[in-house]
Amino acid sequence: MEQVIIIGTGCAGYTAAIYTARANLQPLLLSGTQPGGQLTTTTEVENFPGHPDGIMGPELMMRMQAQAEKFGSRIAFAQVDSVQHMDDGTFTLTAGSETYQTQTLIVATGAAPRHLGLPNEKSLIGHGLTSCATCDGAFYRNVPVCVIGGGDSACEEASFLTRFASKVYLIHRREELRASKIMADRALANPKIEPIWNSTVREYLTDERGEMRAVLLENLINGETRELEVACVFVAIGHVPNSKFLGELVDLDENGYIIQHAGRTATKTPGLFAAGDVADHYYRQAITAAGQGCAAALEAERYLADME
Ligand code: NAP
Image (tube, rainbow, N blue to C red; front, top):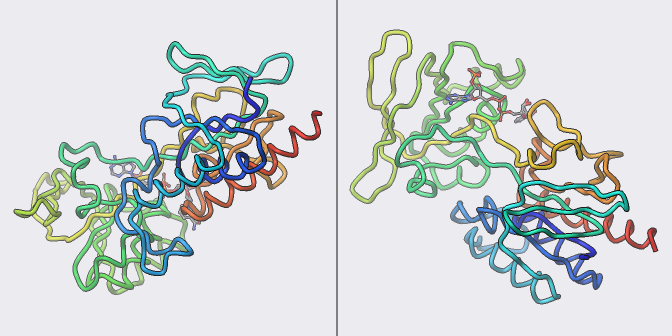
């Protein structure tokens, strides 16, 4: 029986591990299909405090892993399929043919940015394809870029990108934005943002170095296609929180994000805590996820102390 299992090895998971390990709880971390989380898919991280010269996303995650292991965290690869809350208040996790038992559970499984599903998108991430304007916008100064999507995220990303890019195309599949009026109005009033309505991206086109060069656009009304030159594509068509495997143990909002209780990382199930992007559609930053990982660790620690 473990005292703490942490599912997820992004910023929230590793921070929870550092804290619970330093509290002598010997946490077991279970990493899913993307060890290191979303930051392993980005390049330079310039906004994580303590790194004035920036740090590469994968390196930051390796350093967090080393820090977690230094204090006794153990890491195992396991894709958790389901979690059962037992009569004695403990949890049984099933991952393929393996089972794990724990007194407390910290869920830090993150949220995966939704993508269009185009053939070459995996290889383009970090080479002109991203889902994070805050992370990557500053790399695209005085060049045209585009944002795909019509929600609050797309409008927010587009507005943010006007600080750097020469032009921001906002590509939406309909002719009305889904975003809240205030966000939509702000984006559409910005002279650097040009909306492209009723259109979808059919292909990502690359240059000889494999970097994004343009997108092939299709007008969904008349079927016409054209190339649009952009140095980077920011995909903002929503995120998919990795929360389904928890079933009834947590309350989810309408987008699948775990609802935290009492303004903390607690959930409706005692002993089960949620931290980071799986429970946060609002900030979605490495540093806020790390902060929640710390909070979840402190809550798990207090929960265990109260049980004794
Ligand atoms: P969202 O509201 O679900 O919007 C996703 C957008 O992507 C929609 O416009 C949708 O088009 C489009 N889309 C989805 N699948 C697509 C596809 N396959 N191809 C092309 N377009 C596609 O997601 P979000 O903008 O990330 O926002 C998620 C939640 O966070 C919302 O509740 C939002 O209000 C909130 N949020 C709030 C703030 C803020 O208040 N500061 C900032 C960001 C997000 P359709 O419109 O045609 O469906």
